[in-house]
Image (cartoon, rainbow, N blue to C red):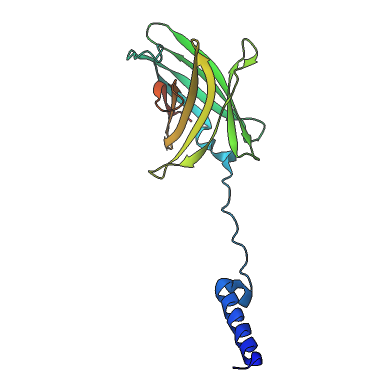
Length: 200
């Protein structure tokens, strides 16, 4: 075999190897696949806008193994603020013993992070409870959307995670749960369950 034929054979072999190892060299690169669309959650709380009857079960003694719940009935009304994604809740319930709970909630949506911040408002003291609960809605295993919102706080001297879960159970029913975790989120104790029934 001459040097020229050997050189030609090596060149052909190199070209074939390049095509096998780098197939993109032999054809135009396909267009980049766009990333999946990010969910715009600005309307995720729209199911809650309106006036509701509220039935609440509250576990006042938390993280001590208590099973003594107290029940309340009243109202939970939710309204949009200034034609924005933000909304405001007015909440007031009572029980048969005359115990009275009232509060307000401000929910703000951040279109950059696609997350909600939920603040408890004390209009009598003029304060917002901080830190807010932060999170978003996502489809669960049953296909229904559920919002989960988290914060860290202190309960009776113990560092806890706080979790809110909001879900629509249909056009006339909504449910909210609050739970605490004292072990970094490994286990949760539900201490507040509110079931709302739409009035209008």
